[in-house]
Length: 202
Image (tube, rainbow, N blue to C red; front, side):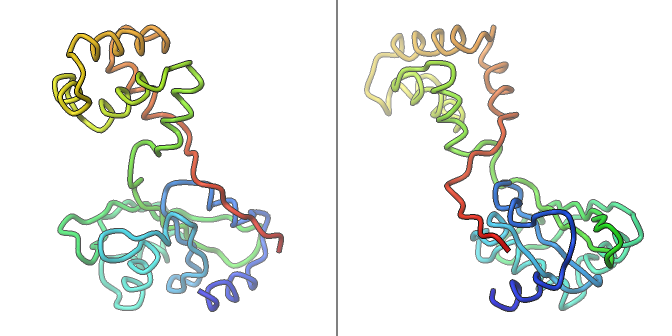
């Protein structure tokens, strides 16, 4: 990690890379087509048996998965979407490799992984507070978001099914939605609200 931060000091450009820590998409900045110099907070978090940062470093080192070619293409202004193998995960992760305009400095590529979740817990909590949900309604909304049915919620919460349905009606009313599908659509588009991130001035 120290080597990465030292490498980051070499990069001069208008974008404050530490702000990427506020984004819940795992992202890794690559220069020269083969050198990872910065990973945001989401990329450093565990992902199965590894992290997005570690995965990118391995694929750049061993040249597999087409990542090196995609990063070199990004330096020429091209965008690539490719499946990237991840250790310990039978499913390859879709990554976008995007060109980074650094105002005349040497070109770079941004490797952006798919989001680990459609909505962060803090975003869901903030949404509930913003629309005025009670604690019970917020819990039901969270359970629905996780895929539980009203019957399952009633059983796990040890309440009557009619109580759960009343909460669902209140959720629809308070969010101005005709259906729970519309509520879920609102939630899926919420901006990320991650845990507090300390940003240090360069």
